[in-house]
Length: 143
View 1 (cartoon, rainbow, N blue to C red):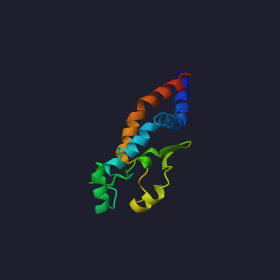
View 2: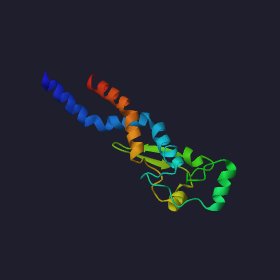
View 3: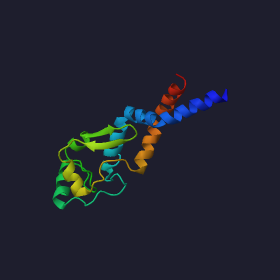
View 4: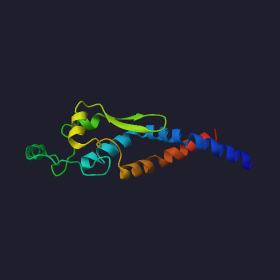
């Protein structure tokens, strides 16, 4: 009886990474939102640090005219950069990238850490996919 349970648990252990990635794929919208609105819009990079350098006075005036936040760098003007953010999945990891042609320039200006999840966002993702992961694990074990 315990031998079968042990074999099932060993099988689950081998499959755990792929089940996590499947759960993350099912929640790609959450990953994108955590990076764009959960971090960038708050002025934070993937390390949880303030995006620097701050906006120049001219940019601040333009953002204020548009009714956009000017007290922090959000790297959001038209919204195209945020919309262009996608998640690329591999076998045991994912990478957040942008298809926007401005990406390289933004990363050069503000540092290469714009895309990715900081610790707080990563914890929110874990909390967000936990139930899905458990359901996939249960299905995997008892199929």
